[in-house]
Length: 252
Image 1 (tube, rainbow, N blue to C red):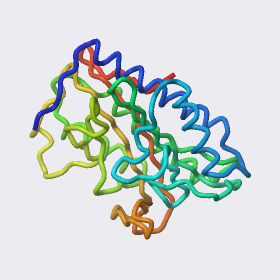
Image 2 (spheres, rainbow, N blue to C red):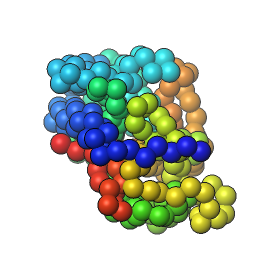
Image 3 (cartoon, rainbow, N blue to C red):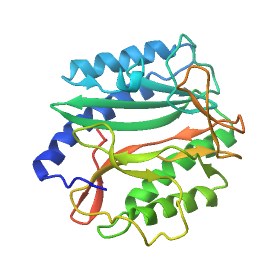
Image 4 (tube, rainbow, N blue to C red):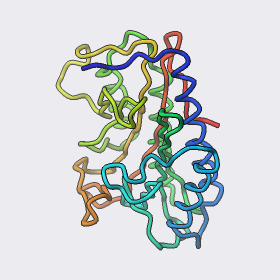
């Protein structure tokens, strides 16, 4: 496994790409309300990305048709924007990627539409809080499996479970690079496998299920749901390991 170590100037290029992602996500959050369509939101974000000199890196990636993954309610990741109009009480996930000067950005949020149930508030909070807890605990020298184990335990302690079969990932001159970072421990030894080092840049993205962790891909070949058929949530940041700690690149 070859995990790239980025030079400071490369990290700044990745930061620039990720700032555009963060700005686009902020724009979508501000416009999340009943009556707006998923396609409108997608177009809004794509225009923002292009206006800032970047490309929407998801568009055409592995055949994905749009600039934004819009994952509605039971869809946890990879939702395709449609003409669906948001309704009060929906939960919508936005996942956005950019390419700027040959470097990539990637981040995601889950957002309530108007007032949602306490259960949905807890579901969204689990993804967000897991992400920030993991970032705060990253140290130079810890193993990626330790990080995956920490993420899994946090999710389980909240009464939810991580989606299986999908994971966080390295990022740099490609949208997806080594390593893969599951939200659960694979095997039984967290003290094994590659270590986190200064200069590494990667995406963490907790994907939260309620009762069952098996992923099911719907007929459009993109939308990913849990086999329990219940709502999920998803949060993601791109981070760089600098001076022994993780720094979030995908923020405004």
